[in-house]
Length: 418
Image 1 (cartoon, rainbow, N blue to C red):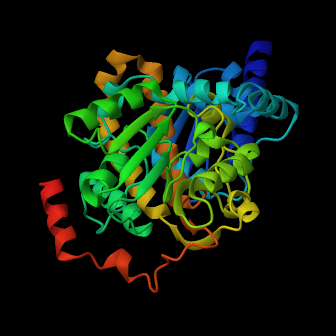
Image 2 (cartoon, rainbow, N blue to C red):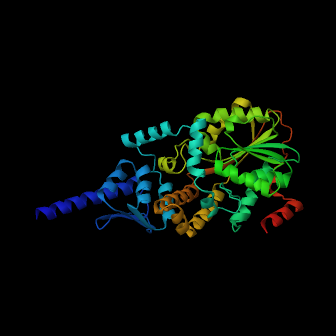
Image 3 (cartoon, helix red, strand yellow):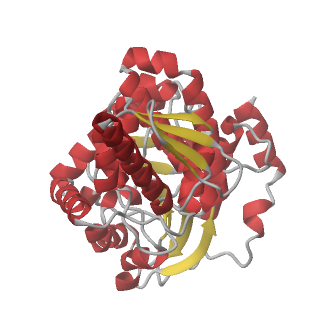
């Protein structure tokens, strides 16, 4: 009798903790249960998923620091998710109750990440290596053929990922109004798609910087293969070491890796390269207000990452009297991009597991699904900011040039995507 009473008490305690977890997550429409034990169920709508926790130790860690421990437990297989993972994560993302965990343990974890992921020259190289140098073959499984690992631009809701990534490259080029013979510097060039597109389609000369060895090697191979070595130079170096005089500065997907404390340094680099007469574009994941990036994302996916609010990015422009010419938010386009990536990733999951292991697959599945949810819900934004020096004279009179493609551009589009 005593044993049965203790069992009932323990089950009641577990059920109480499960309900507390649901409440702290904003009561998403899910069922959460202990394996073979009690459960708690939200009454906020039709259930989209079931969460099963394997043991009491995992449950306790969720209470201590859900921001890190939920993702780690899922990756380890100690938490399973059945149903629509994206809908579950989106429901949590939309909840106003969700915030970075409070308490001593989350505070210590956050401070530890800040200390160990500093975006110094050496630290940035380590952080970038962690994410981008794991295997080109891995990214080739689920990105488009050009390996564009940033938000696409979908001209229509039914555009393919390939067409949308080509459209994004051209969208960027039109925004900075590239002219044949101009000199362009790109900071953080990925696998080289934008630099090659600028040289090929717009007749400019490009110097592209990146500290990912694997990406630079692949970009140089592409430049050689496409006969563009005399127009594009890929340089394996930190953005802080960029020197020279250029007409245009472009950075797509690098600001997130710069770190909040380095924004003025990046602004100084931009000014010394394009001066008061040049123009530029920053494309980056951002927020509506300053907020830390998920500690789980920082620990396991993007070390040193930070997604800024627009007013924080102004620290790059204001000291040098740069004028903001245009701001566009492509949040819904990034949600659609990530949907494509997640679908392709799932189709390649068995191969990814053979390349790495099942834990790696679950980690990246959660990262991609969580990213879809973040952009769908509006917790993340995708900003493109066009700016110009105080003496720049090549400013557009209207924005028509962005959306009225010439017949020649239409023909280039058809040829490039056929």
